[in-house]
Length: 196
Image 1 (cartoon, rainbow, N blue to C red):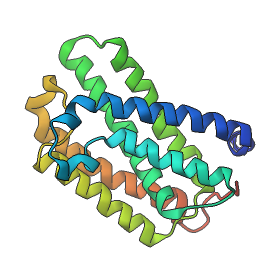
Image 2: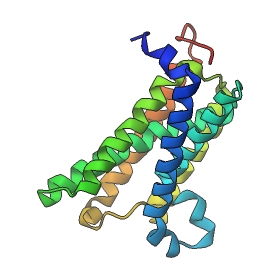
Image 3: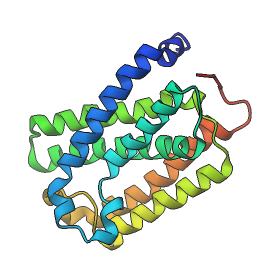
């Protein structure tokens, strides 16, 4: 597996990944457009979960291209990319289960969000955040869950509405697990570490 890290650190590959993630981020904000129009201004920053996660990673990639580390953004990136990557895969599989079919956009969302979660983990050896960065990220992530499931600002999948409490419970524990992922891959002693 270590053979992949020279590729991940290659500047040309970083530029390619930056372009792909910028495109995905823009598409994500467009996808949320209809929901953002109906969202009270106070909640706007919390609604587009996945594109904001990929935006954090875009900033991380810019830092890497500048040969820098921006630890708070790295913590936000790994936790939210993993969380919303896995969340969207599960939700789209639930849509398939509920409807018996999934359109091409749903399939694309499964693959693109799975890729988000994977890139979060693949770049972990290059991150340099500390406990306080992870704690701020945990507060952000759990607060976002409150906004989604107490104020019902979550992404809308009308066919899954009856399962909102169960989805909220799953999402809470996925947030906790994502924070643990951040700890395991970046903060723990003797973790695998590389320089960009």
